[in-house]
Image (cartoon, rainbow, N blue to C red; front, side):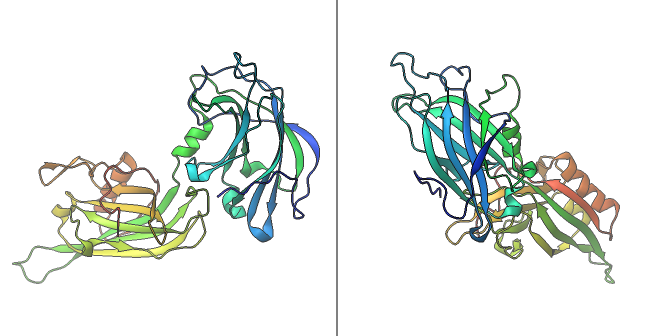
Length: 345
C-alpha cells in the first residue's frame, strides 16, 4: 500500500534541480464535462535499490483550472498509478489541498516493485478536484514511459498537464488491456495399439515455457503460476499446475503437462484451458489465460461458452493435428476468459 509523507525525501534519495518534460493520455472517464486543462505538475522520481522501492516526490502543481466556479476554488489532489494495474489497491494518492489552484504537497509516494518490473510500466500522474458531493473533476495528467526513463535523473521535473484526446483510445487503456503473453508448445502422440479391438488413443503434451510482461496485481510484484485443464472434463484429477515462481513479471516455468487416453476424434470436441495466477495464501488472483481448441462454440453437439478460442489459439490447435507427434510452438497473448472452469483449487 502507499506510504506518504508530508516532508521532503528521505536520506536515501537525492532530489535537485528542474527540467521540463511531458506526455499524454488517461484511463479515466470524463468528469465535470471534461473541462479544458491547464497548468503543470512538479515531481521527481528515484529508485531505492536496497529497499526495492520506487519513490515519487510530488512537489506541487501550478496554475490549475478553477474547478468550482460557483465557489471560486479548487480542492486538488494527485492520483498515481503504475499501469497496466489500475485497481484500487494499485492506486496512490496525495492529500487534498483546499481552496487553491497552486497546491504544494511535498509528499513521497512509494511503490514496492523490482526494477525489472518497473521498466515495463507506465507511470500515470493525474490531478483531480475533490468534491465530496459529486464526482471528482479531472484537471489533467501526465504519462511517463518507465522503459525509456533515465533512472539517474532524480531532478524535480516540471510537466505540462495534458487533456484526454477525444475520439482516441488512450495509450494507458491499451496497456491495461494487456495481460502479457505465454510461450508454449503442444504435441499429440498417438499410441500404437496391438489389439485391434481397441481404438487408438494418444496423449496430449503441453509444454509451458514462460510468460512475459505479466501485469502487477494489487500494485505489487506477483508470484505467478499456471493451471491447466482439458475441457469438457472438469474433474479435479484433470487439473494440473506448474510451480510458483517468486516475484517476477517474466517467469520461466519449463514445465510439461501430460494428458493421456484421448482419441483423435475426442480432441475435436475438447479445449485446453490454461490460466495464469498470482499466488496468494488467502486467495489466488487471476491474471489471464488461453483457450486452445477448435473454437467452434460447440462440444459433442452442445453449445458451450468455453469453446471460444481466438484465431491464433485455434490455429495452434489445428497445427498440432497436422504435425502429429511433433512439437508445435506459439507465443500467444493472455486474455480474460469468460466463465473459466479452473478458477479455484
